[in-house]
Image (cartoon, rainbow, N blue to C red; front, side, top):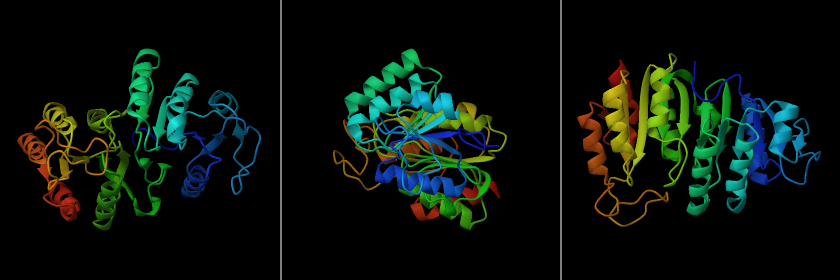
Length: 294
């Protein structure tokens, strides 16, 4: 079992004709993902080198109608990415994974409002995220597939790099993953920790969960309370940015301590108060999880 993506996922790639989209589409196909279509407006019918077997359409609606796409990944440049998300939603795609980094906050506020009003069934992951992978079944995004191993640990993270790190550590320890979800580090995004935790809590294929947060906002504190109230499976965690000075943004747009809120110490305290095992350093994420479930 898994969450969000699996054998039944039929992917359309928005922006497949660009260099980034083409590269990661090839990687996804090599991994085994069912890529059924590409979309670039004005290039319907065109062939992308190395991807000649994937039909190209002008619109997502055509990809849904003719290729049966039920999930979309977005590699569209930032000025056009918001409209690409909304196009996929309007076409009936219920899972949209936005990899694009640098989408204006104003655009994402508009996207969130329209999705909540007109397309409440849609699950948006990202933007500015590595994507979602169910090992051995489906890889959507920019993560290296070979470090993953099928198993029972659900992974959810704001950090792409630390997602790869925990997955590599878990795999090296013989602990596979049910699904790994990179939710991204932007302040305005789709899926948040609680959404992913709820999926893992209900998934019979997920036996434990590892969560990676970072400074800024209060998502980790709210997730800690959700776990305490709703999740019966073992949960481990790590918080990035523990040495970040207040007022200085650390990597992600949302990773900033402002107004005295969002500090790592507060998040760690909330997680520990909820009974969650918190790894003291990135190097100890895997061993912290292993100690929790063995």
